[in-house]
Amino acid sequence: MDILRILIAIFIPPLGVFLQVGLGGAFWLNLLLTILGYIPGILHAVYIILSRGPARA
Image (tube, rainbow, N blue to C red):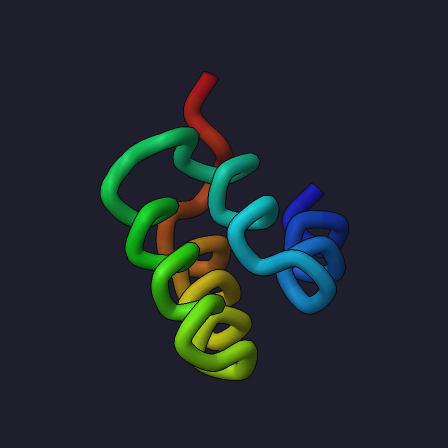
């Protein structure tokens, strides 16, 4: 499932973070980073997905 989230994060970084953590602070930070620059948004999204482990339901 992480591979799917990483692929989503490459194309739509905020969606990848949302699928991992929901509408928390990490999502809003990623949205801001993606607006300011697409690459920082991708890097942050991949970091969040890999560091948080399995999604919390």
